[in-house]
Length: 329
Ligand SMILES: [Zn+2]
Image (cartoon, rainbow, N blue to C red; front, side, top):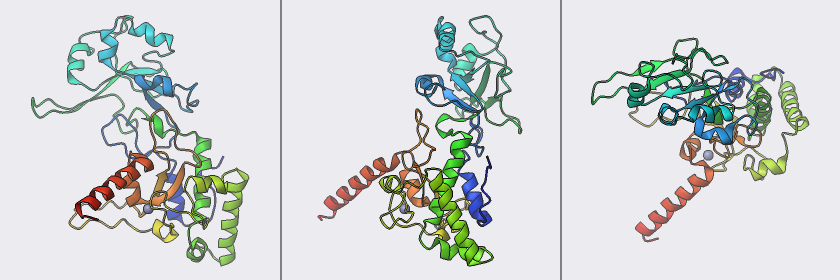
């Protein structure tokens, strides 16, 4: 399966399509890998196991690691057996994650060992055996001048233990999403007209458009009623922003977001148009999938953030109502 279709599209658009298959937004020095493909090892918090275990969610291509809180594990004498009964084994497919300094002091390797007598050791692999049974990310505090503590998955070739479970998609799904998103690109207003100069002849541009649309159709990814229902396209059958519903122009893929005046840093990776999840990503559902992705304005994406479109609309309604009252409208 090719990772990128040879579509003849300009490189900046091909790059944008490729990046849709990458995780994003995880901050530095956290346990999560950022900007890696979405089929990497997933990290599943113990409390989310029921919703995210592979039999319920999906067989994770590069496996998973369950994150177990030391305060829960050590406070309960039966925790080891409880985990085992669910197929969770520390050092094999699970790790203790120390995030709180008091947990480290009370239950760290200098103080204790696992309930079955195994000494605590730092893990250094994303696949079984994990090379150990714990890792740690404890933030520095200013009050007692305690230093930040980072143990495990922190060298340049192994940064982050895995990806957030809700960002996961199989390589097949990643590919199908790209095929659909490429078709949606060609459904943007004036796409052919705008992209033609990027090809040797306008005939080639038309051919590329036909190929992309047919590829999507053949794969069941150009179901117009479904795209309309998700407000990924509008009634003109043009790609639209899922929040403001205004048409998306291909030219906007190249525009940088206008920076607020006086802001010092310019984020050059932020473009006017960005990948938009219709239902927001959250633990328990795998939202990176066809018919849940569109192209939307960067600004609208920021407004929606983690609330989802419905949450953002409810907020907007409140804002308008409050303003109407205050203005006597
Ligand atoms: Zn918009």
